[in-house]
Each structure stands twice: as structure tokens, then as C-alpha cells.
Image (cartoon, rainbow, N blue to C red; front, side):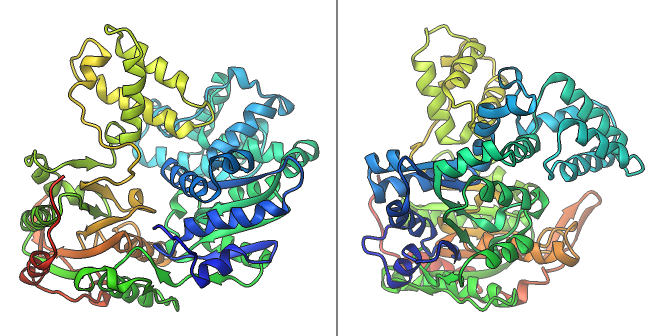
Length: 555
């Protein structure tokens, strides 16, 4: 979204007088733009040499927020006044700067990757259930600001819990090897910021803090926010988009805490992302979640024919793949610059579609679960390899790329390692040879033209011209492991997140027949299927809409 002049509701949010502000911003309502203008407003309240800390979660979100801030503030003011970090990056900087205060040797620590704990658990040779129980136990214990010794004591006290002995074994091995897991970064940073002298340094340095997507905070991350800055806090997000409880987020508790500390929440209701047709479908699911916020299109005239939404029933997954591929071809024929997102709750449900697109070389296809196809990571690797001797090996290239990455950017470090692991699966003898067959799109575009294949959680915060949300059947949506209680409510929010990725067109589908370990079976439609309102119910109606769209020239 590009806002040349702030709307009334945007201006009210950006210039709110309250020291602590809570902004409820459903998807597409200009949250990032408001945060950038909020930073512009807050600069006047900073003391000498103070900065604004802007915190978000993923590298993609960090890049997006950084770009919006730079556009609003200009390069010089952005560099002078704002620090943008994701939470693990902020925690890493705290640990590396002050770790010796609590007995850590920053120079000798091995920084985490998401796979390190998993590999450590797999190396024990125990079954999947015990490994999962051990991982959950470690996560639970480390959500408190405990020292390493206190972690061992806490795990020892839980010896009767399933997986406790395994968790204790892995934790002792981690401490001996001086490794860190992601949760260790957060608890150590929390411990450090609770030391009066250390915390005072950060609270003097940061005169304001902006938190993007507050509903994804854990209570531990909320504590890090408050320990880092007490002067002026701004929280922007949408409780209806809280879908990361499995990763430690506590959306209900965090919302209560933030509401208690902030002035009356400021609501954004105008959507700059989606067409009226898409919003009608999104609003129908919001209502079924008991939301009182109904979005309206800020610029309905910009959407040809008001956009498109459809709910289609297909015979089976093979028919669904033909439908998605066929409509995608028609969309791209009308507009070669269009982005098409194909989103499933789980990867297995998209397998037929993934295979179908691999046989279409003329359509760019990106799988979001592969680091090697992340354009930013591939562009970084290409840049570094180009500076190396022509015969440089993959090992040499990996070290060069890792050396070029900020040590606190643990997410990018992991993506680089994952990308090189994929490159090593080939038979190339040099790094340049390995890269020669890899295509890379514009690294400045989070979502480029073509097809994007992704799971529900990966696409949060992104948008596509057209979106296919597939597999509205029981067992997939909602997922069979999330069919009761709070997990079911969150699963319903996952559906809302998937739908709200769409800009112009949205197609939701379900299959009448499915297949599993013992062959085909009759699929049961999702319990939410009948709550989804759409304009089109037949393939012919969607094809007619696409055919009536004004064509765009090829690029």
C-alpha cells in the first residue's frame, strides 16, 4: 500500500497523543504505513542521542518495515533515529554486548538455528512423541528468565513428565558445547535487561518503541519490549490474526496486558489491499469469529468489476490441481505481472498442485518452504560468489556469505545454511557452477509475478493479486490436531489469515473425494464451509470474470 496523504483514521493513529498506543489494524489497512508515520511523529519527543526501536518478527517483515520507514523519514533521518530489528536479532545484540555480565562468553557461543534443537533431539534416536514432548518441555521452561543452572533444576523437578529425561540430556549437552537455541537467546536477553544497570542503558538509548504484529508476542517478548523502553510504546496488530500459539505466542494474555497499559484502542477499518469482492468473503469469516470490525474498501473504484470471490467444489485433488493450474494460466495470460498465491493449511494437501506446476516451465513458480528460492538469499549468495575466484568451492562460498551477514541476524544465517545444503545436493564442483542453474527474481520484491506455493503460516503479512485457498475439508482445515477448544479457535483465525492474503481475486475450494494411506474416501466439508460467502459458485463464473479483465501487455 502507498499512501500519498494519510487518511483521517491513519492520521489519528499516527499522531495519537497517548504515550502508550494500541492500534488495531486488520490486514491491508495500512498498519506499516501508520507505524512509519508514527515514528515520524515520535521523533520530536526523543531526548538527545535517543532512537526509536522498531520490533517485528520475520526478516520479510523487518525489510518491509525498514523500507516504509525510509520512504517516510528519508535515508538520513531513518539512519539517525530508528533501529529496526526482529526479536531474535534484538536479543542477540543484547547477549553479544553484555553476555559476560551473566557469565557467557560471546566469542565462544554458537548462535542458534531452528534446526539445531531438532537435530540434537533426533540424534538421541528416541521416538517422535518423546522428542516432541521434550521440545515442548524445554520451550516451557525457557520462557522464564532462568540461568542455565536454573534450567537444569527446573527440568529435574519435572522428571516425571513425558520427555523430561530427554530434555535434560539435550540441555546438558547444549550447555557443555556452549551452544544456544532460539529460546536461550530470549531468556538470556531477558535476564540481562532485568539487571538494573544493563536495562537502564537500553531505556536511556531508546526513547520510543514500535511493535509490529503485537498479537504474535509471547509474554517473554512483551517483557523484552517493556524492559528495552518505558518512555513511549506503540503496539500495532490484529488479535484476529493471532495464529502462533504453537510457537509460544499468547495472543489473549498479551492483548489484555497491552490494553491495560495503553489508551483506548485505535481502530483501522479501511482496506487498501483488497477488492470489495474479496472483503465480502473475509468479512463473512470475521463475523463467524464474532468480530465486530467489518472492513470496507478504501478505493473500490480501482478494482475492475469489484474484484472476484468464489467457493468451488471439485471431485478430487487431481481435479482441483487442474482447476488451479487452468485458472492461473488464464490469469497470467491476461496479466503477465500478476502474482498468484496457492495456500494450503499443510504441505501434503498441495502436493498434486505442486507437481502440476513443475511441468509448466513458462510460468515462474516459487516454493516458499525452500530457502534456495528466497530471492533475497539467492541474490546475496550470487553477489558474494561473484567476488570469489572462479574455482571457489561451495564450502569457501558458504563461509564468505556467512561472514558478510550481521552476526545478530540469526534468521538470515539459517537461511544461508539451508540454501547451501540444497546446493550441495547437486554434483557441481564449484560454487559458480552450482548457482548457474538457479533462477533468481528481483530480491527487492517479496512477492514477484508468477505462482507462489506456500503453507498458511508462511504467507502471513504477504499479499497476492489472486489467492487460491485449497482443501476446505475436515482434517485439513481445521487440521485434525486442532479440532477442539482454543486450538480450534486459532485454527479458525488461520483460515481468516489465508483468505486475507488476496487482493483482486479469491478462490476457495474443497474436494468431494480425498485419498490417504488406505485409498480414496469421501471427504467431509469443513465445518466453516457454509459460513464463507462468495459471489461465484461455478468455474464458468470465475473464467468469465477473468476473461472480462482488461489485459495488460507482456513484460
